[in-house]
Length: 77
Image (cartoon, rainbow, N blue to C red; front, side, top):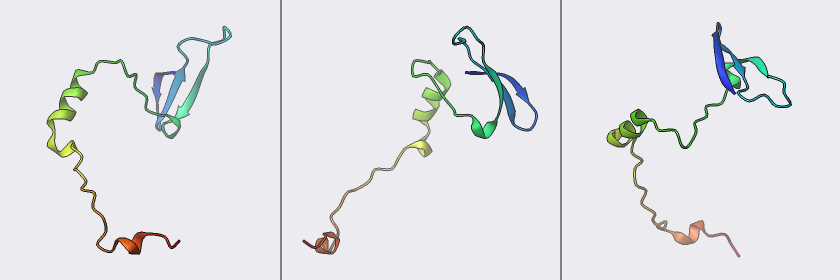
């Protein structure tokens, strides 16, 4: 499915690239019905370079520690 037309009020006309059963498919959908999708093998230089260079985008490291009172977190057996 691809967006073929941007319409007013956050609506879009979408159509199928390769029609199934020889019949083309097209419909109008609201933006809330759309799902973002990206092919894994697309080469997008902007997104790959920016995400690695921005320190704010890095996930913090989590330190795993046992609780101070370990028995408080164990279920009774």
